[in-house]
Image (cartoon, rainbow, N blue to C red; front, side, top):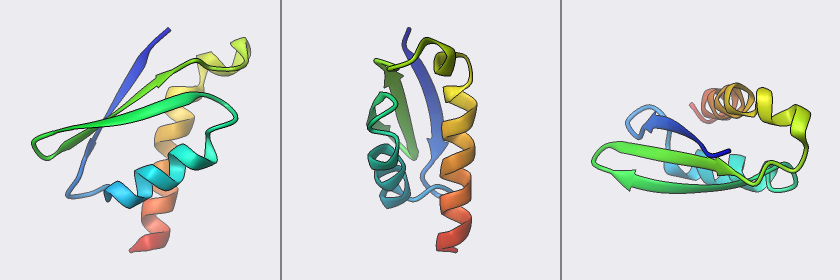
Length: 71
């Protein structure tokens, strides 16, 4: 299952997304693509079935938390 989360780069810096991807590397494969002011985090290859139900929301919350720390 592929999931996509759209992040506005004016709010969520790219370096925060990169950090979150590294932190989630053992859980799923996540790549970021950029289109205009948006970064799209594509989540795939979730390692555990039960995690696939919540990973999209959990990853978005994690990025938000990292962003808050960087402000």
